Image 1 (cartoon, rainbow, N blue to C red):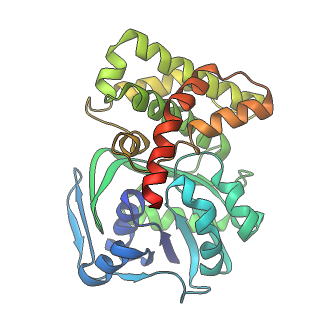
Image 2 (spheres, rainbow, N blue to C red):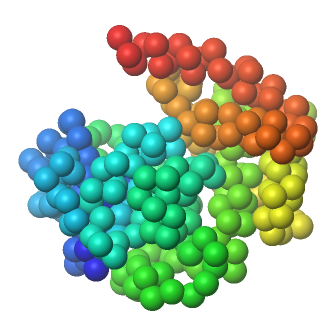
Length: 311
């Protein structure tokens, strides 16, 4: 199976790197300084599970790779998915398929609108990592894992083939009973912790140790769970309690990527996370007052970051 990794930041660099290091056929799709670094120096990963380096990798900007991939792992930022979708379509072989690994709940539909509904699976990943330089990744928290499956949850050969490749790379893999429920349970965690952490301006330890802020976090999670229930997505009854328990197990200094981007003045996934909660609530007529407050409080910083980035 030839696997293309679109977006070689923390997620794509780590998981694509592990696949390539295990001998899988991996094509890295990047641009700018990251593409230059991949072609010149390869890929470097520092990890709490063990560092590794690939002195040579196959890397492209995607324009000359039509039909090159049996599977495309999409690991760009959530707000970049619509922009990346036409490239993903070009990369796919006739029977190829796509697995989005980023945050949010809108990527499968955004990709399907361009590549075709039957060619998109649902997916997510868990890892605490960051890009420290072009083609240089640091993994510093959480056992890296990938959860994915058909959006209608049927068994399929393509799911089995990708799962086997990931396991050969010593990546923890789960094919859940409900792919959409797994995506929404991850969304419940990441959107709430990102929004509250960004508004509070502090790391996980400070958020969870302050009763008032922890209560805000819990309320934000319950709102997102209500949205899933309104769509008859079978999230678990204790999804909020599970998310809080996972958050309690993180290192005190952990922050989310959306939080870091906002705090450092970069464009973030605010629209794809907190904004998506608010939009979904409006569509379903489900109240989301806590997430609405988080979104309103953070939107000016997001707009300022995007203005600065466009100069």
